[in-house]
Image (cartoon, rainbow, N blue to C red; front, side):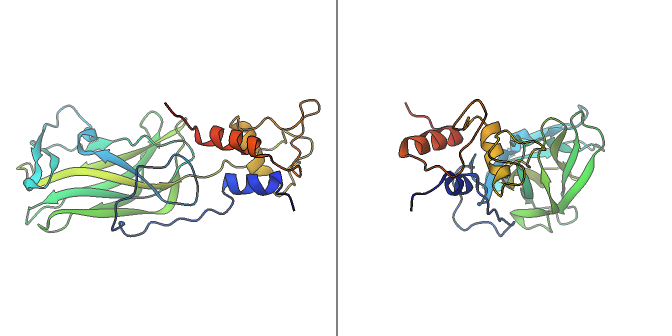
Length: 248
């Protein structure tokens, strides 16, 4: 039996999507994927991306305890270090790993995952964690109770670091945002006459059309032909466009 467009597009769009914030992999994952909804991806935020939220906060960069570079405050300030991860719209943030160095027997660093409006107002706390004791260089994971969906047009994700010590015994070494991608919600109206809003694969076919991956099988009237067989040539176009494949 010939495979149908419905089957292929269901696979391509990733109907089944499950992911959870798990323990850090024993083997580091490859660079973050920019496609696929079934696996956990990682976005690295370097220590140098954490900058003072106020110009009055001075800081220094050090080779943190021979383990790697880190950044620490050199003056007391009520304002934290902040970093804004650059994730694609639609990404679902599940957790953030904060990498730190702490040899302070009294103070711990506080790490927050927050969301704000596009202009920085209306900050909302999504998750938090801290360094602990004087363990040296370790990491702590702030797990979001509800995944945060990135919407770069209206909101932004903000990572903050409060360090009460100014002697270099507390330092931020970076962060890793754990996220998955997802398919856009179904629109209210149909693009193709033969794929109504009640069609079981309506959401995924609409996502492909909105992304410019397909224009359907007929222009006037607009049709998708969801039950027509897919040739190898057509599938090459779908995959190359969906993945943005390049070669030199």
